[in-house]
Length: 270
Image (cartoon, rainbow, N blue to C red; front, side, top):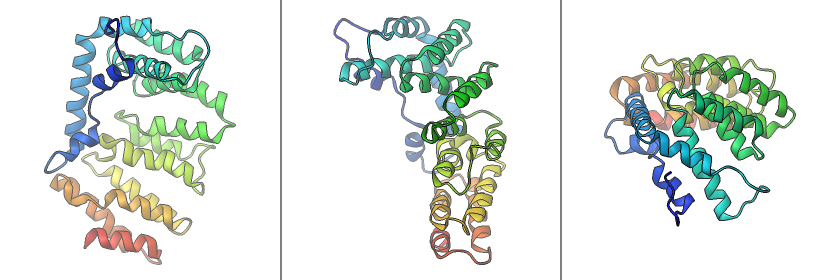
C-alpha cells in the first residue's frame, strides 16, 4: 500500500498528481500540445505499471464506509482513491476495469461515480459506451449533470475525439442556444482536450471556427470567448500557430460580425 500509519491522504493525492498538460506546456518556448500529451501519457503509464500493486492495494483499502461526509479526511480519502483508480485504468488489467465498473454502478456519491465514468470515458474499452448511456439515462433530467456528461466525453483524449464531439452536437440534450451546453461540449473540447483540439491537421481549429461563426449572431459574448482560445497562436509551434491564425482571419472576414467577436479577433491578430 502507498499509505503509512500517519499518511495524510489528501497530501499523498497531491504528491501523486502529475502537473497538468497545460502547466507543462506553459514552460515551453513554443507549445506542441500533442508532444506534451504523449510525454504525459507515457509517464502516467510508467507510474501505473511500476506502482500497480501498491495502487491496487491502496484503492481497495480506501473503500467507502458509513454515510457520505465532507470532512477533510473523507475528502482526502475519496481524492486518493479516485486518483489510484485513474492510474490503474492506464493498464489492461481486467481486475481494474471491474473495479471501475463496480464503483460506477455502486458509488454512493457523484464524486465517485463521475471519477469512474471519467476513467471509462478516457479508455477505448467496450464498457465505455454502455456506461455513458446508462449515466445519461439515469441523469438526463438534471441539466447540470448532463453538462458534466458532455464535458467528460469532450475532454477524453481518444483518437476520434473530434468525431465524437461532432456527434454529440447532434444529441437531443445539446442546445446551441444554451451557453452552458456550449461550454460543456465545445468549450471543454477546445480548452480541455489539447492533444485532440490541437491536432496537426488543424481540424480542431476549423471546428472551433465553425462554431464561432454559428454562435456569433446568436450569442456574441460566447462567440467572443471562444475566439480567445485562438488568441495565443504565437505561443504555439509554427505550423499550429499558422493554422490558428488562419481561423482568426476567417472569423474576421465574416460579414456582419458582432462588435464583441470582432474586437477579440482583431486584437489577436494585431
